[in-house]
Image (cartoon, rainbow, N blue to C red; front, side):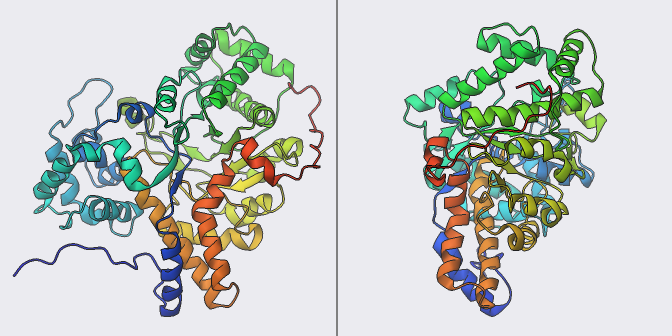
Length: 497
């Protein structure tokens, strides 16, 4: 007897209750085919420019996916067993078919996780795989995937159209020459792939690479950075270069949400100390908080949307960090005080119609207590989508339950996928659209929204809101009343402006 082909249920992730499921099914169908707006990602612009192939299945699905790797490591595998190369040159697994077999043999580990949902969607909906991963099916799936990935139609630019990606934002260091973006623009892709300014490396003077990062910034600008004032000028000049290259936003991954500004004298003292010797972590954090305040000031001037996602203890394992470098050392969420941390920034710029900030968190306890009330009051603030450890069916559903009653739908940014795994982009957006359809179906079933209202809201959450949240200032200006006067910023005594 022939084995039944592996298929995904059309109502997956929709509510189990029959009345809501019927409504959710209709709502999902209204958004399923909408273009994808992917405004916070980590896809390499160079790979898009070169129209790279994805190599083999292990290179596409396993090795770059820290979600997937950390689950297998938690069950006894080592990173090097999964094809991750150690920095010190130690041996690691180069037989990618064997890496794939190890993953498939442990498929059950991913039950109930968002990784399982994404992988199922990618394998079945994107690649047409008809057998569920297992030790017995690993080789056959590997061969089918390899054959597809070897063809031109599976190169990255072709998949942009297949995935219906309207715009994708990369994340780029301040000293990036943006040459790949310039080449993409020359190819007519300037509106489809845009850079994002990520200055964390130059904001923390206690980090080992800080001086090198500042030198690289100066070299890229063709200027000298000799003091704090020239440093601020260099940062602002580089931001303007990103704006000219099509950037919509900045991105800040700080440990805390502190935005307390320093006096010009204190900022200069720390800067001088960091140029000549070590700076302790507390001093580095104070300088970074000051630079978040300065970044908001610069956003008022240049129009870049500010993204802030604090609260993650990066590279928690010193041993793994030493062996494999950043983003491999078990990032773990921490508590964040948004209310007090953001108060200096919002006091200065929160009511200024020229300023826009999107707040993310990995601590869902603050959604209803802090973030929803902040977004529900300050016109400059939008709540970013659940992500990282919260971009799961349960996490996204809880997000809607916790924030909507205070902030509504229209003080949120729509879905943001935050992925390094290109093939997972449609899977992540599909899941978000299903969860939002489920939440809206409940409001319809309880007669709190009409079906027409819910349909309009579903479309806005999937497409309209992310476009609006990351719009260029000129594009977003229609949303600002023509006679709205920019309020005067309240600047602490002595703060460097």
